[in-house]
Image (cartoon, rainbow, N blue to C red; front, side, top):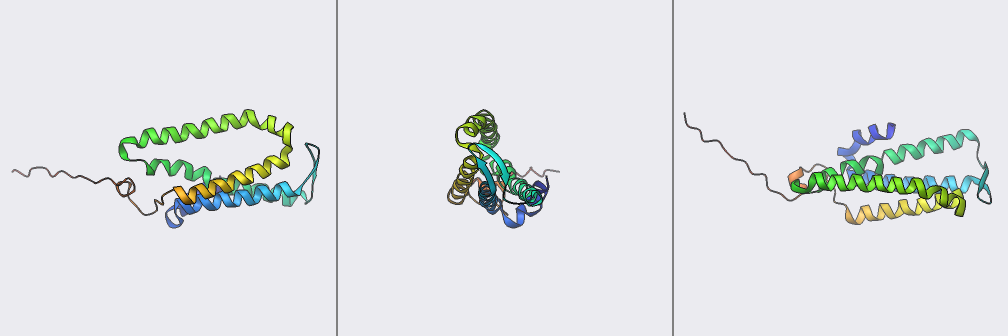
Length: 165
């Protein structure tokens, strides 16, 4: 919630790419911290190595950086990077991919939880977040302070009306 508003407030100053990369990196750090502080017996979490208040703060930061990062930028960037003719289709495919990923995760999470446990799932998510940051760095164009025409390399054509009086 607060992450969304913060991202919107800083998006034009920091840029979409930086917000997405830092979101992925900080998510990776937080997933790693949570994985390291879990006390695990087999696949069951039996406790934490930190007080509950600290665990709650870490949890709150994780949600902040998910929202102040990929959860916001993955909606903004697709609406900007596709050429005008393909923008709605491209954004739709991007949104659908996210929904499909969420649906798959809903069914896959319990299977992974019983197979490898929460600690290993968190380490896996940390690695996936680093991969997301790397892919963002090397493949995503920065759209900060650029018009949609500049981003998609399209020319803006203006037509002047005939001024007969």
